[in-house]
Image (tube, rainbow, N blue to C red; front, side, top):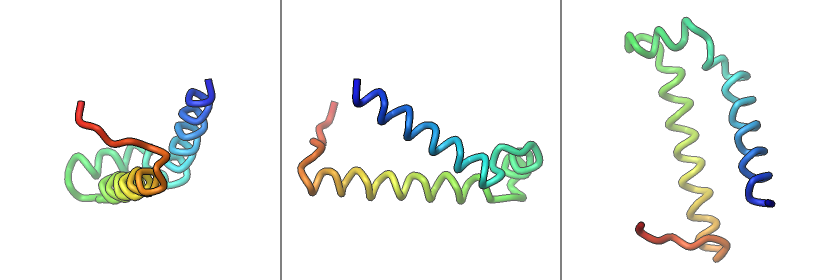
Length: 69
């Protein structure tokens, strides 16, 4: 149950950051599709980098286990 709460909090936080970064606006999405506005691309790449650092930090602290499925 605790994992579901963590997932909910993480999802709400990510959605809030998407909204604050104005990534959800139509003109930003259209600009990204036309390769004129790279706001969405930069936001997603930075979120992937933060996630990678977080996963390996949890792995180093032995709170997570990496395995190939």
